[in-house]
Length: 510
Figure 1: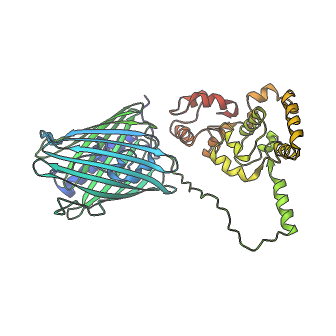
Figure 2: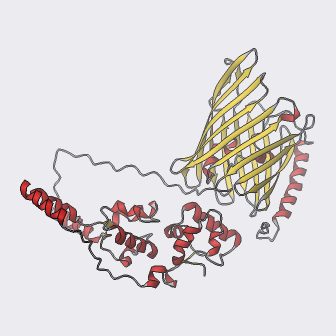
Figure 3: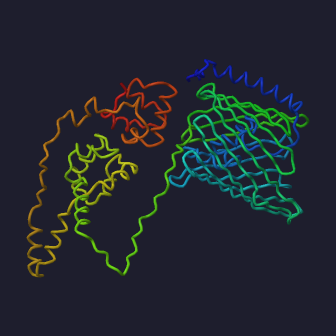
């Protein structure tokens, strides 16, 4: 596996920066908050967040977002499933298990669910959470949790409460993120109103000083309790290995951990020190389809359905000038049933390769019956179609005229005509367009090809890659340098080889 060898602008290796940062943080913790002791505290939700000192509100880029900031669910690029297990401070029976999942839904954000179980049969706590994170604007996300919290005590019965959390997250840049979360904002109560569940407010900062090193800082405040600070770092030493360290106050303790991954499977371990009880050992196992890269934050508002204009009782008069302008507008539209590849390539977001695909589809399937049929062309994206829809027409449809003529025939003549039509052999029309040269069928001219090493995100989308695939290519080039061959594209995670083989005639890396 490839080691992380990137340096910042000052030439400092990230491993050296990681160690130097932690010497400073530990000194700061001792001077400001005394010795690193801890009192009995809440149940840790995952090994990764524990290893980072529970500083996760501003990071929140995996299923742990449900626990720390539900807005971060929007950052998850693919389906994720995770589980956590620990025995709380080595006390028999105090076992804690958590299961959670996150599923992105195109156009609606990411939905999550969580179930946790704590305690022996004599005292049992169960929590069910429905979570949702979505985009508000480019780089800004919001999320909420709906929680059902229940407790049952042997010989005393059971009770439950309903809680609501809300969170907001902003990626100020590729290296900086800010987040905030409010928990139990509806002031839930349990034990027939005798016990009020605590309201909690948290704010966090996420910063990437160099590639491969994450730094997080959180401020956490539970009402009627002292303010708590959390500082954590995560350093990815190898592609499959990450180290984590963290400290926190009130209660004061230090943490560390590590993470291993093989493909989509991730194993994490977290350790939290305790002054009097046994130390915590937290284990988590997760499946992350899409890896750890964050999803695109580009926000596209939903288009409202076109509503028919209200008609007034007064008939609108159309002038001769208006008629001439409408006819002129219609004449300026491109007829996709007659346009050449060169004419189609003049449309915005339509490359020469896409123009060829349109022409090939038309030749194989016959004329387009409507402009919307253009969506059936291979690799025609919704983004490209939305840009060119208003610039296209299919002209007059010949079958409509034939139907009108047929309806005007008398009944007996219509039957005779039908018999003649049925008996007549169907001869397919021959296209008048001469077949292109063999070289043109295989690939574009070298000067017309798109250089993947210099291509932008819209250009990669126009070629035929999805948004996630295009972002993976750009990230690979930024981190590991230019591609040396087209075959190297197939080695990027998430890029199918058949797509590269299909479009290799229209791309280059030189």
